Amino acid sequence: MTTDDATDADAAGADPRAWFAVGDDESPTDRVRNGTADAPADWPTLAVESGFADDEDDYYAALREATLAATRAEVNERERADDRQLLHAVRAMDDAERVANELAERVSEWAGTLFPDAGTGVEGCRELAERDPDGPAEERVVSLATRVAELDREADELEAFIESRAPVAAPNLAAMAGPVLAARLISLAGGLETLAKKPSGTLQVLGAEDALFAHLRGHGSSPKHGVIYTHEYVRGTRPEDRGSASRALAGKLTIGARIDHYSGDYRPELEAELDERMRTIRARAGDDGGDPE
Amino acid sequence: MTGTDASLPDGVERRELDGDDRLCTRGPPEYGEPTDGEWRAWDARRSKLGGMLELGMDTGLSGGETVLYLGAANGTTVSHVADFAGPTYAVEFSPRPVRDLLDACEPRSNLFPLLKDARRPETYAHVVEAGCDVLVQDVATRGQADVAVENRRFLADDGRLLLAVKARSEDVAAAPDAVFDDVLADLESTYEVLETRPLDRFHEDHLGVVATPR
Ligand SMILES: C[S@@+](CC[C@H](N)C(=O)[O-])C[C@H]1O[C@@H](n2cnc3c(N)ncnc32)[C@H](O)[C@@H]1O
Image (cartoon, rainbow over all chains, first blue to last red; front, side, top):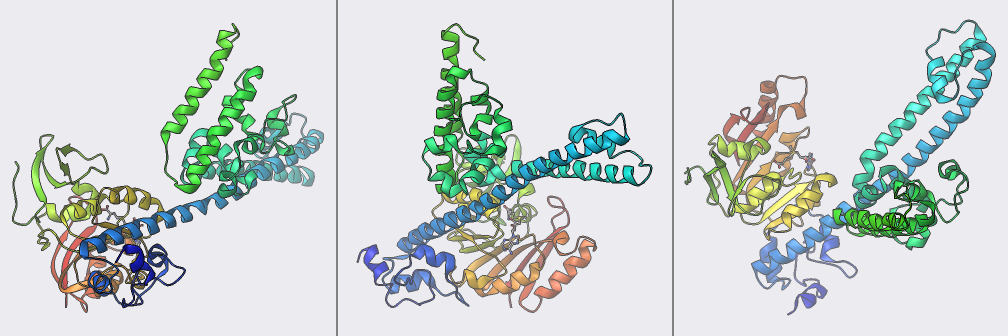
């Protein structure tokens, strides 16, 4: 009997609780993950008796294959669930930053009427938060400035969280894009799985329409760059080569996202290939007699 | 000195490595440990079972056993166990270290990883066989005695429990000796304790326990 037959015959006489006693729509791998039994039994002997395995060695080889596949799949799935955490964290970080900046403007405007020497922006708020208010109006301004400083600190902590989580949830993407950009790409795509399924041309322009990144891109940037424009490999490349740079980067990030999603192992050679490709692109500037950086 | 030692299982030897007398097993290196040909050092400071062997506890191990290992983490110790034992089931419930555990399983045909909670043996009793010779337990979690009791069902009547108790996992504030007494008392109804040794030389506030089912 071949192994396939044995599986199909759902190991006819086998104990229905055994991992290898599979039902119609199940594989032994599924049963390793989801099955239960109150008590163990002499599974190797039962497997041979029921015809699932030819002998004990055959049994352990099948067991090994099923436990490795089940564990690998489950680890991938559980770690992939981490991509949701990244998505929320990066959105929260951007919200916290945006709201802190908005409120900081309000604070500077108001503070200017009470403290002639008040600074501006989040930095100004941090400094205001340290002051001793005199009277109810100053109290409100100092209190509001304190919230801004706290919100800004929360944004920093969210960033630290992203930096520690991204390399686990998406090791290759995080290594090449950096943890925050990796999280942004996952967030813009709606998850690691959807990102992994997008062609690289789509990844390249993810976030291009998003007003949030307008300030990161600065003025006059071409709409063909999405959020990956913030990557040093695009931003730091001379304008006439940015198209090639962002295509090359998007290509490698797409491969990274796919490996992260489907197998989850870290492949440092990807990053090395990207570095090499970028050296080639940037060397053009030198060949043209231009400034290489 | 290279040599066999009566208290060591077949497949575990003391060998001179980098000028030191080290416990070694034969297998692919896993965590940057020093090697000598096929042999690789088993670092007692990174392994409670290694510490128990290093201290000369009578583990009853002779090599080739069927082993259920609870709390496999990234596979440091269980990879050495699989080097000298027979079929070895490695249970760990945290996905992170299991990535490395999978790497340790890859070159070993007798090491079976299971991402399961050791407090819920019914979730792996359909995979792990009955009558295991050895139950190794190193789960740094509250209720270590309960885990050992619950997993008695996998052990042969003349099998061995090799348990590392971490005092701080039960109660960070209590005196370790008081914690050890409680754990041993909780084992009492299910296991006969054969030997206990503090593992402090290698692992602070840990107790090594060798026991057999009643
Ligand atoms: C001290 S580490 C084990 C180190 C490992 N035995 C070695 O020497 O290589 C303890 C492990 O127990 C795991 N653990 C804690 N509670 C557990 C449970 N209920 N089921 C399975 N594993 C558990 C932890 O995730 C951790 O990896």
